[in-house]
Length: 196
Image (cartoon, rainbow, N blue to C red; front, side):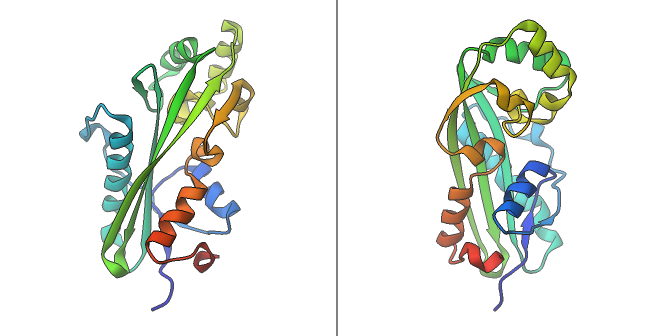
C-alpha cells in the first residue's frame, strides 16, 4: 500500500505554510465543525477534542487518507482565549496580556484511514509578551491580524514584534508543532519522508 494523501482539515494559511516549509504539500479540506458545541474548561483537553472533531468532520469525504486536525488556544491566568470575536475584544485581551505570559496549547489529531487508527496529542509553548502602549495596541488591532489568530497575535506577523521570548516549540505558536508532527507520524508507522 502506498503513502496515503495528507489532508489538512483546516483553513489556516499558517498551518499550510508550516507543512509546505517542511516539504509536505497537504490537500486542504477545511472543517466546518461548530466549535461552540464543545465546552471544556481544561485547555489541553479542549484543543485535543476540537482537533479530533475537525478531523472526524472531514474524514467521511475520503476513502484513504491521513487526516490532520488542529486547534489552538492561549491560556492567560487560567482564562482560555481563542480568536477574538471583534476588535474591542482583541484590544481588551492585549491590555491583559502585555507584560505577562500565556501558554499556547495546540491540539494535533491524526485519523489514519488506511489503518483505522486515531492519534491525538497536545503541545504547549509558553509565550512572554512585551509591555506595549495603548496606542500600539490600537494600531496593531487596526491591522486586523489579531482577529485571525488564537490568542490575538501572529508570531510570524506583526505580533512577533511584541513577543519577548518563547519557552518550548516555536512552530507550535504558529499553528502546529513540527517536532510533534514528526513524532506522531512515526507513532503511526510513517516517516516525514513518505510525504515529501
